[in-house]
Image (cartoon, rainbow, N blue to C red; front, side, top):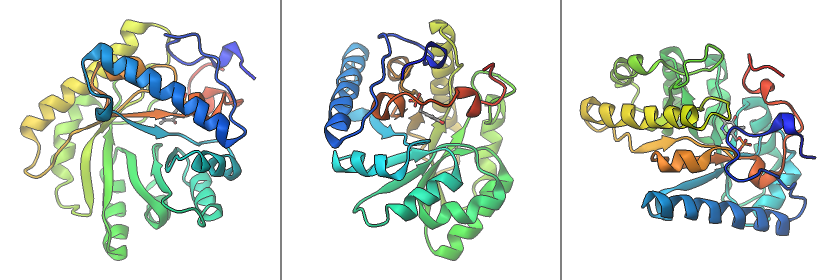
Length: 265
Ligand SMILES: *Cc1c(COP(=O)(O)O)cnc(C)c1O
């Protein structure tokens, strides 16, 4: 199933993702990913406990998520609300399942997210913050959110420009149901290691700066950055959550251009 055109951003190890079709496969892929996380942490002088693995199940059917759950995985990231909420419904019988929405969300989909998601990594507009807060208040619940930053400067990427983040955080203060935990980014989709690393370093530097000036009570500890192809670099730059799809589930047959509109196919 591996196709060179789908190669992830930074093949620090030659990436041959193995499709998981049983709980045992998921356990084996998980062991590999955990070993890579541990090695990256060792190299960075960090504790592996300081990095959270968020499995990304986008494009895979609910039955694959069920197998992953049988292998012990409980949290799953999805970047499309429709697809995510359909899976959440199908898998409502599973104990302890938690959903993270990690992709762009239109304001008119806020209500859908509030029904089943426990975190959101792609907050990038006040219109959406307002709508999410309203729906959360109605539901009597809160939501962990990360602010998405466009660290690569690509026009095709969602997220705030770094220089707009400080004002944005202050503008979020009235939305008390949103628990702002930190920042999220997608690095440049490239094999240029220094350029990819620069995106991750940029997010960390921005987070460190924002921690000095953030509204009282806003923690900003989290850096959600790094995917199957580049997470070692992200860990070296301080990632606290890595979002891993292909290394756990297997290669995606759909082109990445579907998820990063503007990328050449
Ligand atoms: C798909 C996706 C990931 C995971 O990418 P993989 O290459 O499958 O590890 C991470 N973050 C976001 C926002 C995604 O859309």
